[in-house]
Amino acid sequence: MGRHSAPSADGTRATRAPAGARVLVARSPDRAAELVTALRGAGAEPLLLPLIDFEIASDQHSLDVAFDALGAGAYAWLVVSSVTTVQALEAKAAERGTTLSSWLPGNLLVATIGPATRHFLESRGVAVDLSPTGQKSGAGLLDIWPEHQGSVLLPQADIADPRLRRGLVARGASVQAVTAYRTVDYPADPGRSLAAYQPAQRDTPTRDDTDRDQRVQPAAVLTPAQAKAEVDAGRVHAVVAASPSAARRIQADLAPLGPCRFVAIGRSTAAEAETLGLAVAAVADEPTASGLVDAVIRSLAGPSSAPHPSAAPSAAETPAKDTP
Image (tube, rainbow, N blue to C red):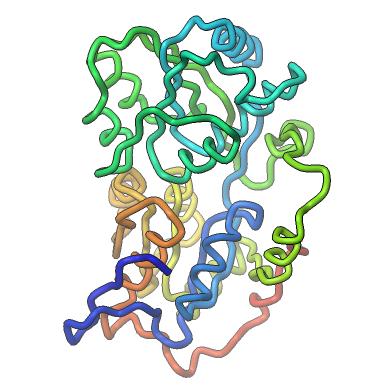
């Protein structure tokens, strides 16, 4: 699968999860398909626990002003820190009857933090000029940021860590930070859900898309109460958090985790979990599906984390709602 293998107890490199491993992923079905497939490929059973969702920004006027200035060439750089930010910008472009790639000036420079955001932008026809190859985080981008690079538009979540903005300013950039979307408890208000504002990428799916959809079987979707019961019963062996906000919800809804291993997508998520008193078993080397699966395997490599053979399936294996 192209990922690094993890060391096992005997010093060899494990490439699969222990037999019977069940992994709880704190993501909604529409954002978890790649990770679900990767976990199954490694021999684990994925379960989904949607905890957070996304809505359009409360202050649409400020976002509109910044987006119009972006299209008019007012900024030298656009810094994008997440796929969700790209989706918020795509919604703004769609409101103006165009695409994001067409809206962005040809001389604009674009920077991202991680490979998922970079690939998502490139799939939309937006070239990325700067992205960290080492530490894939805001700190990693700051490490390679060229000083005194002029004006920067930084669209972010309402709860974004301010350190990226401060770091850019410290390196001589003139930064305009604007809220692109809100992070809310799942599910979002249907009238304000960011997903409802997304432009259609294609009217008709290709055969490859259809074949892929047929291959990916939906994972069980649990409610917080069902997930808590599974964790307490020892039937969940690892839980994956893909953001600091997900870590906060896991602590609030599922703690104490007991022998269930907490796996973080990156350092900021791990730091938030540790602040909350959650023991972090592993951190993904890369914020990708393969990186997360490798971290899950590492977290389960110890003998104490092996699934108990008598752990019987429960009613929580039935999805709490229909999955696409």
